[in-house]
Image 1 (spheres, rainbow, N blue to C red):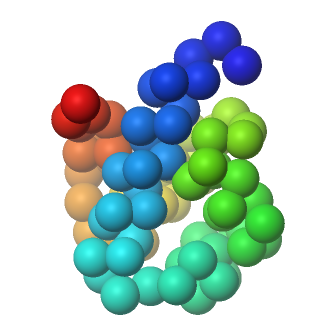
Image 2 (image 1 turned 60 degrees about the vertical axis):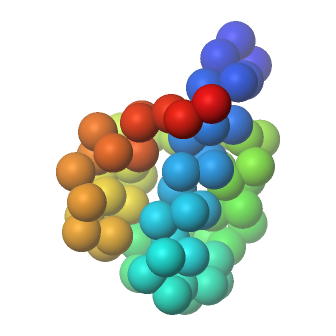
Length: 73
């Protein structure tokens, strides 16, 4: 994957915001209508993520999609 490091940071941010809202991976995956396996693969940078899924994630978390890309290193 060409942008592996960026996907890793994105996944970490998604997991951080998801956990801060008290959602398990399973529950959050249900909310945004993807499988728990897909959710896990997104958070662990094992696959690329579509814009549709990113928008669903940000909407479900109540945050601006740009916050998912605020990488702190």
